[in-house]
Image (cartoon, rainbow, N blue to C red; front, side, top):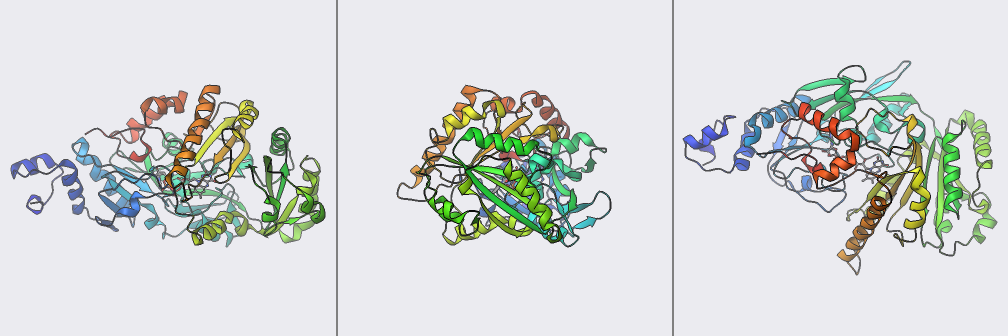
Length: 517
Ligand code: FAD
């Protein structure tokens, strides 16, 4: 039946009605994909992987998966779906490394473009006064690190985990312990090549050229186009890293020290922090990778299961600058008010430091604890609210650690406010990340339900207390919630959507706009 309808014309309704064949629009539109001439290839079977992500809770099967070899493939696919018009339900989702949390890179009955297929394209490093590297949108940050280090260079701003793609993190922000100094990853991009949702147009954009698209795509949740190439800013790389941790009893002292480091002229290259709830033997665990500055007093330290706050900092240096780095570290530490017996440090290579979460990944995989549901909640909390938030949430709404709880401030006067990222209105705000794992246990799914309920209580607390908190890596289902999330930016979001993806073909998994059919 289907074959009798070939060659497929873009006018599907006339094709099917003239032969009196009744095909559902989604089946016939998906079938039309087979007519595309591509450098790469399309898959129509065994598509389960494209319906999975790190969150592990949403599974939407696509109709096809495209493994593109070239930007022309990405463009041809979008153009084709665009030309099918609203007759078809087909949508298109770029999939990076699939490390979204709630189906954001999935496309129910649509086409998933597996961007990593393009990563084999050569990375090109540009030396000179303002060095940069050209990479594919499907490239993993870990590969960029290895490649740029060959030239004595490296990107400035990272995520905690490097096995994520350029397109995936640039669609969100890419926030980590360097963001207080350099802004998130989206602020360290010189140029993009984007395939828009309007006819699959291939557009090069930057601060100076097609800047509306450039800033729209950065932090734009994949709504306006697919990033096929990015030019990332680089700086001379360091060889080694001093990696230091210390504990605090009081949140106020901890956050004061974090904010002090953020505004100091001479400071660390990386700063984060995390909350420790109800954990005994923490310092003993650290000993496998860190050494205590004062081993005797460290072994006498007893947390009594109280809530503790850990400040984590790192200083980069070259071997020939070891003493200068040591002096700078000593000076910075002397200005802080941590519990003296809890100062732990280690020295590692830059790659070991930046790729640190991969080490945990390997261990968790061995124990079967990596591919479990991850009901993560990431919030951006304004400074004026953070003490009240800490008091009400840590040890109260959140009674135990189901995974790390990160907390650190950034100053957005150093961030570019032209990107699509939505942040609180105050200059200083905190990233608070509840990185929970729903570990299969006796209580099974209840555990997941329990974490989800806790997350909801934190969200409710934020909405009751202030409208100033924003979700990072957000997901909402109702249009009004998105509108409230974007606030004054909503108007520009809808205007750009109409301009660059008028049929709402792209990134359906974000659930902001819906393709009408
Ligand atoms: P995917 O999940 O595949 O895609 C994410 C979204 O981007 C989807 O909507 C997708 O359609 C879209 N997209 C993908 N590729 C493109 C493209 N080329 N062009 C346009 N749109 C595209 N985030 C931080 O900011 N800081 C962190 O420190 C951090 N640490 C993390 C640690 C772990 C272990 C994990 C799992 C995630 C972490 N994240 C962090 C979140 C991460 O940045 C996002 O989940 C990101 O989207 C994952 O990238 P990905 O390549 O897997 O993208």
